[in-house]
Image 1 (cartoon, rainbow, N blue to C red):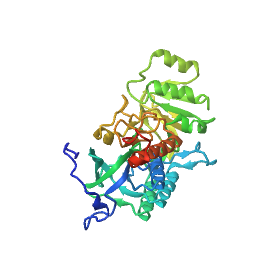
Image 2 (image 1 turned 90 degrees about the vertical axis):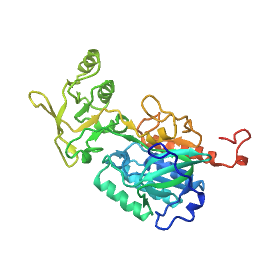
Image 3 (image 1 turned 120 degrees about the vertical axis):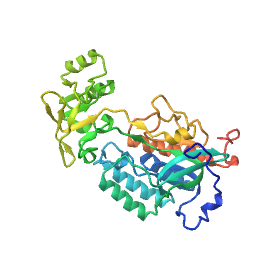
Image 4 (image 1 turned 180 degrees about the vertical axis):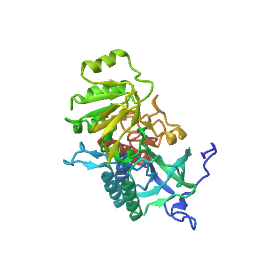
Length: 368
């Protein structure tokens, strides 16, 4: 459908081999369109391309993999690897097997018979995810790989879709923030809890998730504080505040006036209290609830859970035949790059089976 709810006009498969003069040079009909070019999407692209499928990755260069975080729990990188570096390597690897790249954002999608219709816009508003350096490097690599920027409204068709759309992180806003994300501002204790060992840490958040994160960080460092980060204070029972006190975790019921920082390092949190209290800090964990980017899933009629995450089974199937999902936008949603890569691979395997001719499938599985 288009943005006003109408149907996407049919696109003939032969357009792929004979694009209209003056139109952007990218395949208009593919075996699989992958929406999202982070770890999950690139893993899916690599594996599907190796299965000899035509693959187009559609990405708006506005996701988590362009921040400055370093993954230190990913197998095979004993010294860690920055997410942005892993993304660059993944794009090159996918291109080696024939994956094509389209820069833009999917604004409409629906299913028409045995194919999906997709509209992509290249001129879209960005949330500013990622640093200028990482975005510039990704742009340069994209040009070398033949990435095409979508026009005002590009139309294409696909036999299957993998949604690897990721999430939006509601990080606090302050001058210099983008350089701090992944360096001194974090969001995942599973990814970066180890790095807090012995350091002074502040958790910013008001709910049970924030309380659990603060208590969980005690496994790594005794220097933990909790700041509500909003004028309304905490939204947990007083018994939980008492649990914090019993574990020597100071709890401040104030919003944050500022985050003094320099070259990506947050140096303190200044509270909006009568004394403008300044709390020295080395690492901050933002205990927020990321929002799954589920707009395309909604348009396709894909089931979402109560948090807005895409519901998938163990093989990354959604409830819509031919549509798969992987990565942080899905219901497992554990923010691990290693998990996203696994899910992308599994989604590729499931999509490949869906694309088999009936004779290639076990009897009774022809419609899968």
